[in-house]
Figure 1 (cartoon, helix red, strand yellow):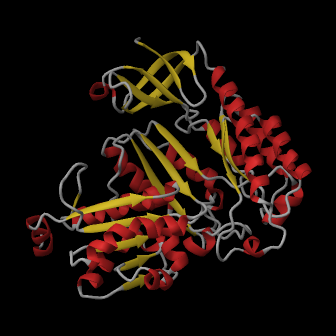
Figure 2: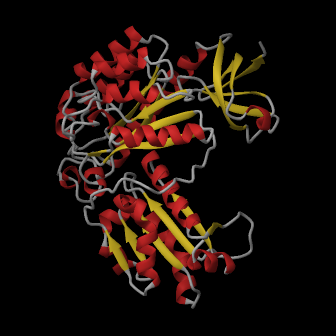
Figure 3: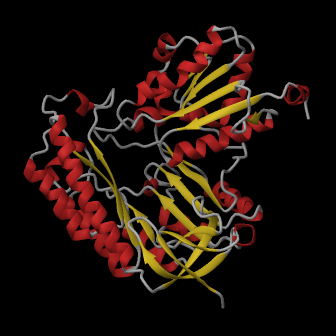
Length: 450
């Protein structure tokens, strides 16, 4: 190992990494952790008496008050620095991209502000910091093919990016500003990464993209996501393949067919609809209609009647009337989702909808959110209740933290299942469980031993 790594280990340098937000951020954090550990810096263990030498906050700007959260999180470490402690503070992710130098003006103790496109360049940027520079890395960088090895937080299920960025311009969304234009990774690189993971003992891989159905449209010649599913799904030793997030505007019916025809592909689809009203969808710039969305659902239900469908929805978007909100509820009743991530609209900086005059009052947004959550809960229970007395196959991932003599795994649909078992014996194994308990967001049962 080189001198720098040896010195870091000798000084026992530690880091603390906090991740907010989506799976893309989780994957970026894993890549950053891989680099920090390669530099000889170890994660601070819970309960240790010392403070971390390096603090990384990987931020998300989707939810309201995201910026305030960042500043309150930096606060204690900024104070340590003002008190003369040697601490390096890094703000990464989407708030970093959005705020850039403004973040340094508000929190001058921060050493490095870096957008998500620099996640695989953390080590180089820290070298600049070590040379005494305060660094802002938010330019639209071309994402280099990633040579960093993610340190993955699970030893069973890994995440693999297939497309970075997003070319959509939804009027409520900050992602295109923070994550840049779409860049698909070469299929050969994706296959090589998944093959390596399988070689390390991973059984499940989730392919990630902000708009995964756009995979390959920026390539010459163009490639199709449905073909990538078949190619990756056929990798020897891979038990399960998942992917997120699908966009109804681009999701081809061929993707549903490729899931149906690929044995390793999990029967689970995450397709945000955002609103059930065509007028609101147009104002959002979503580029699809309610009818197009229902066509996709119909194809899933026809080809894969047992599949799960999950989604995202926003209530209280500027101008949303009571009737338009009701259309969202009726769409949910038509589909009956397995679960929906619900959110009341919150204005994000640098997005068109944030400055529109027709904002919906907070109390109305809150009331609509309560109503949609109530329906969401009913449907989640209904969808899981159908599993009663069925024998399902789960991939065991972790121990049940509440009952250590139980293990936790997921069905192909993504439902969490608990059953008795020894995690050291069963981690990474596919086991059959007969379901005898159905709750809103989990199932439980007894193991069926062949």
